Length: 395
Ligand code: GLA
Image (cartoon, rainbow, N blue to C red; front, side, top):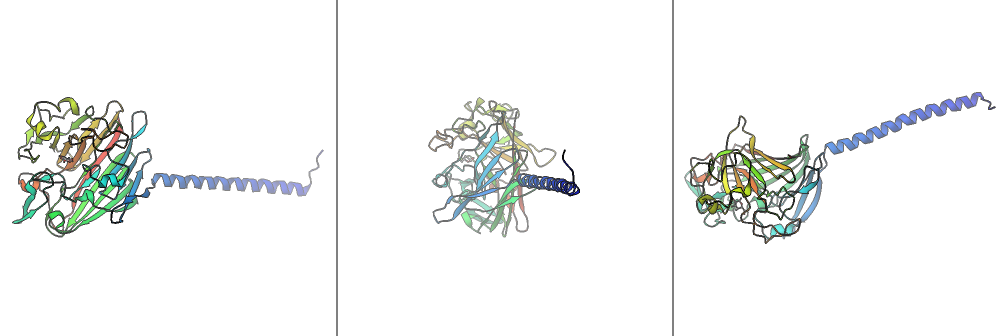
């Protein structure tokens, strides 16, 4: 029989106390490890890498925004371009849903504004001319007789400053750019800030801000081409589009609005109920032939709030649903008519005609020359402020 001596009881108790204490410590440690991991993941760390180099040696950064759900959005400082955006289908499989490239040189070689920030003026200005306070300003005619998307070197072709931000709403990147007085013919030095925030409910919230030192015109937008099938080289004609608009702006041969607000009811331009892009795109219609398909601005209905649902797109097979919210008065729905299969797709094949569609929130095209359209004028002392949210889910 084992003899229990006083010293061994003492050591036994000591061991027990020690074990209890060290267990508690361990627990504390692993709890705090868990806490760190959790803080890290709720703060959604933003990866920052170098995407490429401009011909003059300027480095182009890439920010990867991530959320709790597993969505990822890559934004580069060249043009503020969204180069990759992954979204789940109804089985939870993530795929890239935006057209673009993996390599900076492909963007530099020329492309139709894939994923880019557009400014100073998104869309067209007739004859590359407008007047402000009696002075006429001449802009580049880079689209036939008209000025398009900010000119020869718009905001889509400059390198922005980029700073990663972890906010309560989600991972964000803040892009800033100063457009000098007279740049691309526009008056006033314009300081622009665009913030992309990826929220945990799979929305990319885009906040645009700008201030000027002279009266000028501003109309900023985002030019992502979506293909919710994840097969980026396949036509998007099967996607069902909804547009919250009773009227749209018919255009002339140069795609400049004629000034008329035309009812969509009874025309191929009616998307008040979701309808496949391809359903009427080939219909006999003067406006469809002028645009080579849909390439028009819809006049958004006002909701009870300024920031309202403007549009949606649904891809039945994968279930992916994209909703677009904005406080802008218009949305350009462009069905990718000018894509012609010459540019290589990230997922193999090429970007064929209508392999992507754009939903560009904005003020109406040619507003500087059309007195009946809401004003795009920005005065010193005022802040241009515009917000658009692209939200993904499945249905
Ligand atoms: C916009 C225009 C289109 C076309 C594309 C780029 O969406 O409305 O006409 O210029 O950009 O190809």
